[in-house]
Image 1 (cartoon, rainbow, N blue to C red):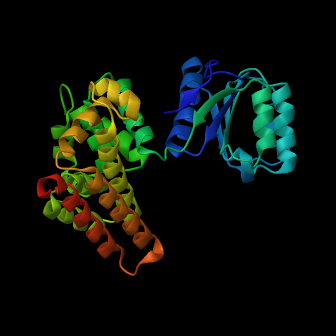
Image 2: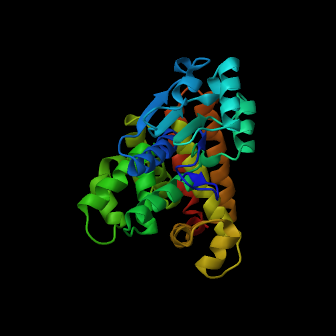
Length: 329
């Protein structure tokens, strides 16, 4: 989700969208353009790349007009602007024109930092658009997408959608839109499963869930399907690691309500309930064995072995066996 500063008028003289998440950057631009056209339907929008914004171009675009028309000037990849153009932009920041909104899209790294600092110092409205690399961030994004539509989705449904779709925010947003349009009432895990069965079955988290539940045959089937549909082996080892670590965390935690454990372990309450069901058969030794198996698989898929698929199969079987270690003891 894009985070905004307290100064949140989309018609502010300058909006600075910082980050590398393309969907959020595009939404930041769209919000400004929508607000401008609501104020003036004839708003002129100029969307420019660094090579199109030459020295002097910004002055031309922002010079007073006989018709006093409203303009939105969007500058993408502002970190790549030439030194001379950066000087133009800095000068403009010191005296922005009326009826014109400048939108600077900046990746946020060290490159072009002087322009980033200048825009912040000038009091630009800032919208944070960070790349969402963590599953928890994508889960929060999906929840917010449902909330924005005024619709209700269960935590399990949100997780299932992230598991099924993956890391592409545009696809996640599109999936939410489709579900909201097609389904009445609360959207639950069963609904997501009906719409995205093939993709959900290919999920790395499905492999992990079946493995930590001791269901080796189903885990191997899910693994082969995942690999055949292009899921990266490293994502599967990551999911396996998360699944086993969750078992270990919960088995060593003090008893308590899901909400209390969620705070202690950094998991959502619904996941506490799921992991509690999965951990029945596990022992501390089993967790240790499973973690070693995951570490070996991780090394295998990152170049330490000749056959990543075999490394994953070996890990899945070891984890499934470890999940039944209590019964064998």
